[in-house]
Length: 71
Image 1 (cartoon, one colour):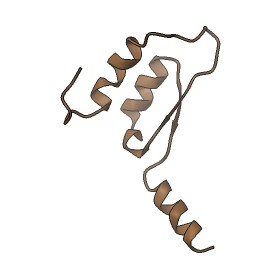
Image 2: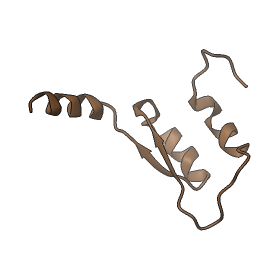
Image 3: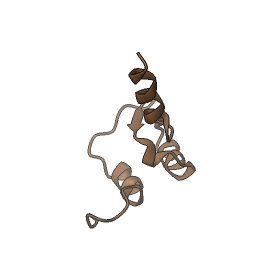
């Protein structure tokens, strides 16, 4: 457990290590995250726990909103 103002990334590894249900070996596990996790540290943590990172790149959401507003 951590304080409310603590960066979520600092608790990511502990959370993944202590999850109560673990999928069977050999199954594909994906983790969808928002742009604040678009860094090598978060990708390394996910890779170490056999997750496929699906992280939206920084600024990608803004670009998509701009494209949608042009329609």
